[in-house]
Length: 334
Image 1 (cartoon, rainbow, N blue to C red):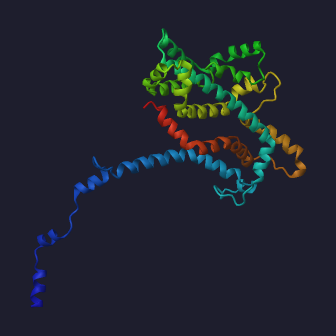
Image 2: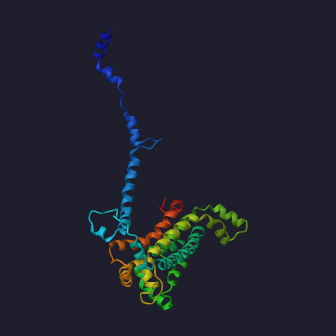
Image 3: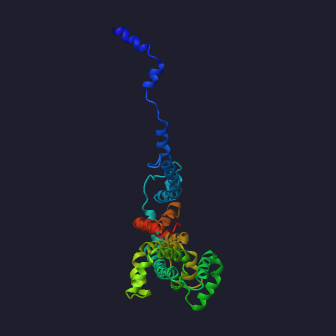
């Protein structure tokens, strides 16, 4: 009997064997890869993550290379076998770069040079954006056209007349050239900030403003009590962008504030970085007895890293609020 059963199994038709084997469902595979209405497929997230990794690598690779090189010694720089990880971390590169840049004094002045115009930008641009969003008046489209034109017009076109005007006013070499334009809504890239506030205040329900006016609130009270408290995302966006742009601005700072034609005590980390070679050579000459090394790529990278480190720390701290504010203000045009 057992022998007969074995013979029957051996003689079992091939079609019956194929029927008992599991078959791959093409619909399930397609839904798994391409997705359906209820569930996202695998291919789309893979493409998105691959694109984000490529873009992230493009941005992060120079910064990682800068950090790695800034900790290298002279022997590591000359050794072609060392690319990313130094054989010995040289913290002296940062101390020497900070000393030659007069880091703490320059850092404090950079905060003032970037912070004061940023505050002025937020005050003036919020008022202008609110007026454009809430009031109808003759020539409103013309005002919008002028605002856009001032953004399109290259700053080099008005640089010489502006310099002559500041010279006649006698404010060159002071902080005033970085204060007056933002107070009038004409700071660096101020038209973008006006449009951000305009877009945000348009989203505030008019019923709230009308209810406040029925209760006896005037225009200013409605602005300060209702619109401003809800405009925190717009202020975060404008504050971060304005601070970064003023922090990185070196040409206008040299021309108007730091004293190209006049003596001035104002400076910033970006300006100190542009004069890093001269400052470091003077520091190395005066500190030769303390073992200051000659200027090399590692020390250059250390100075560059010190100039952008405050911005990196600020972004890491405010990253969550910054992303939320971008989403709520609609800066992407959504």
